[in-house]
Image (cartoon, rainbow, N blue to C red; front, side, top):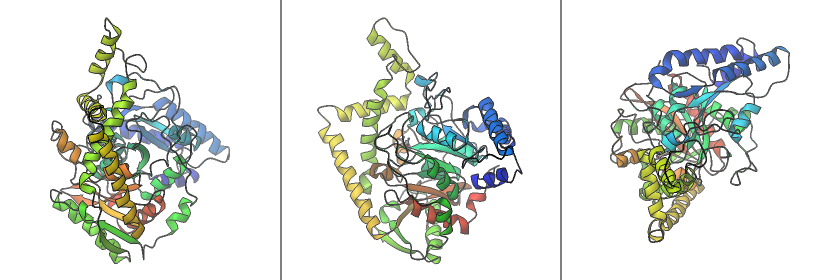
Length: 480
Ligand code: GLN
């Protein structure tokens, strides 16, 4: 599949029309997605119609916006007006969006064609896309393995070559971890850089929307399109000034200071994964980056802190699904029965587990011991990362402690599943931007390396990620 950069050139040079590009995606999905199940729905009619409109404008010589005629697909928790947005949940099975998310609107304004909606874990809780009410997604590199999660659909769709790029959401790693397991690029922008308006909320202080692409250059292009302050999301802020073209001209990393946190090279991690990540370090060092060991001392508490704050906020956000609004309503004699039955039937097991956990840590008797303690540790984690990034330009870690595992292996073991997020949750708790880039294979499955940068300094992540891709070919491998 073309990258966005390539598709732009071919469209501009009239070597291919947008309709042809969209039809190519659709035929690949029709022949390959039966097994993978990345898409929940392809917006075939709308996509072809939008492509034809752009093609006509191009033929007429009109000036076209940045992504004119390029198909992208969205995780099923981003609203696209007139289409179902289920968030992977039964409770929202028939929920039709009455407006576009800000990200959707910005993509449409940039001329992108919204190709469809992609599978995800139930309510974006999970690391394997197995909790989706609509069936699991499989890893295109090996159909007996998970694609990671919760953005397993967006990762698999790009890896399988169904679409040049997609968007996921990342609350604790859900863009980066599936990107690593499927061998694509995944960016979790700085908290607040991309508006969350029209994203089905999971945990509001952690959620971020970001691109999943084949190249770092494409991730930079897409971030520029969707970022920026939005009056409809009070946490959103203004973007940076550097153009992508300017940024990608910086093809030299001499003098760049890279910090390697010793707490991220732990026992229990797959030694083959560690070997691939260490190879990245050696390679970057040989090109002039300076590498030093750093410490992020509160790292051992990050996962516990995440699994207190995340369920606490989720339990509150999910309270709105009461059977009165939004799609599903069970029947019951009394109002209370309707509430209980709707929530009892409409939420999956993992979602119920988190609601109970979240309600517990927020309850009057326990909030001080758990929730407030977690908030305090969150501050310490942030101080750790900020202190490290005052000495180095970027922090390098593995994205995931393992490669993709067999379907079903961790499904009934929530703690094992939670451990898959061990290297990704910190950046959500601290708000820092983080980028996962494919860096080779272990056991014939993709491995990802993670770069964490200063707040709102995605540019440095792009610079190092793009440099790495310019001297390696891992991102050019394809499973099919
Ligand atoms: N796997 C993590 C969780 O289950 C991350 C989820 C996410 O980022 N949406 O909470």
